[in-house]
Length: 328
Ligand code: NDP
Image (cartoon, rainbow, N blue to C red):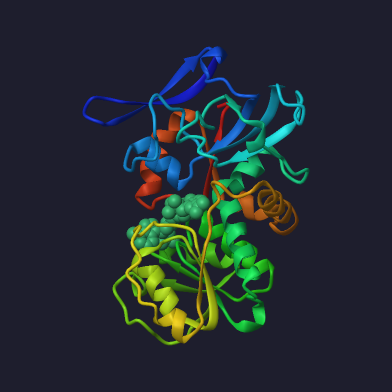
């Protein structure tokens, strides 16, 4: 039997999460079977498990948008038993049974070889949040952002994307400013590499279309008024990598920063990112992200802890990353 977190929906459309034991044959068919060692709780997983947003497209569903583990068997010649692999996105945990289980059956195209530098716990201490942070850094660099241009702002600083983005940017030599609602966590943000910590309340209300030029670039996982104010506060020719919606899905902005300051709004998606981009991102994470960042930034839980943890994460009570150990 394999243990899994199973989501079901009742007639009143409420989502119910329960740890269950299933026969391996109960998983929907797919080319590669993976024994999962570690998974994570990302923001999207928290939405799925609590049912707060319609992330799950069909029930019953095993949630979990990412995992790391070992191939058990494969009908695709690119993988063989014993290969170490990881997966991010592709609708896993939304439309296809996902990573919060002791096994997965997935398409070979979705799997990425686990870099030698990481064990499965490290890979999920990075998880989709950290891989997305790297995609954001890559997007800024593709738009010519270099340290000489000035400070880079990271919003949602204490979250999964935010913490890893701070660590990556500071190692690349950027002056990093962090925006957070948890100023009491400033010491942690500074240890990750932030030199200035600002109160997110200064960015979260409606603001002027053009504001004082403060940052050369930004990584934004918050959206809504925060993203609008960030765009309005970028220096001439600046860029923001926008990947999240922790404040809201809306973008109540004007075109002024784009047409008067040549600002670039670079959208970042991790779910459907092409294979080559994933390999590049994970390769760079292996080279550029120090292991000690992962240790200090991660808590590890068991499968049965996930429903409560999902609530804590949405309440903004989780700092950094959460790894789920499937052996616990
Ligand atoms: P986390 O929950 O770990 O972090 C989100 C952070 O946002 C919180 O820690 C908090 O930081 C801040 N925040 C929360 N609520 C608000 C609010 N109302 N206003 C302003 N800030 C707020 O989530 P992740 O880092 O994993 O994900 C962040 C976002 O990025 C999510 O929206 C997620 O869906 C998205 N995402 C998108 C991906 C993509 O492919 N585009 C991939 C991965 C994530 P603090 O306490 O420091 O203020």
